[in-house]
Length: 127
Image (tube, rainbow, N blue to C red):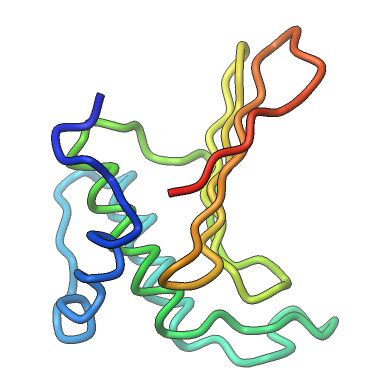
């Protein structure tokens, strides 16, 4: 369980802090996540050469706040992360028994899916 409850309101309210702050993390795996998310702020539309929409600064900053909250709460770094073609930012964790994906669509909309081995359907959630 997370120490601070992760809600959309506290993620969105902290994004202003990130506009003027470079997040530092001594863990190289988390640092890589933060560095790549920060780099996504410079993407432009068609960043993939196939018409992908660039994530807004708001989406990237909300993703950065979310990452810092997950790190502080003791989560492992995601196995995969980065922009998606619809302008969102995606974080994904995979293991032998389950996988989870969180998509930051805006500062007020964060959705996720969790799959467990042997289940027929994914569990959907929103933050």
